[in-house]
Length: 264
Image (cartoon, rainbow, N blue to C red; front, side, top):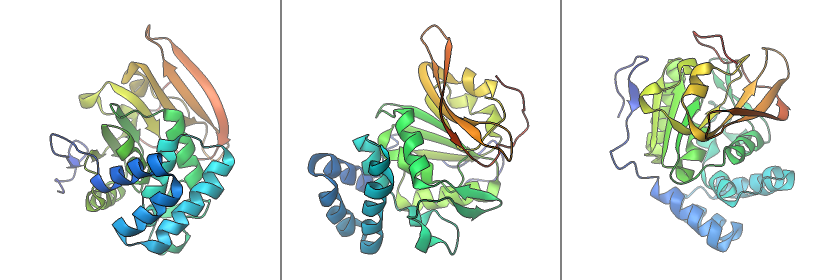
């Protein structure tokens, strides 16, 4: 369902029960029980995309496992989500290469390794409510969908938000809600969030996002100036409200745009 446009209306609101996509959950369960080979066979049978399933399996082994991604739930999600459905027009043949790709409007879909790394750092749990800032193509939200209870994702570029909502709905990711709006403000109506993931780089961590992070929660966010190497950080909010900020790796993301510019 596509709602009327505007920064305050979600493009798609899931049903009250917010079930995760059945097919993806079945693939995840099989992967955890039987391993990658069984998942590949199941993916081919379930989706009919035999070449893409094989490419995803190779992507996971060569780009993710070989570089240290170890969370089996994250790996299973990366094997199951059809990244070729989320890349920009004309780039589907390169969807499983280890690089970012354009999705229009000056934005990109992150390389698979970065998506997997940020997802693993987020430590998603089945009961979690997650906020994503920077929907982009919708791929990161799709990876999170079978790993958590609810995903709320905000995209400032309205055509990207609309397209992501359409693809996510077509693929059955029913626990994802997409909205076009300013990510600096977060999504206070559904706060607090167990975790927050930001897929564009602000120069400082927005205060609103810190405020909307639940006590005991964590945020994964790239921080730094435009046109420079940024820092991928993990921010944890302790039970007493104190903040721990850990730098993980140098990265380069598109800049986060929006109204607010002040943060910590």
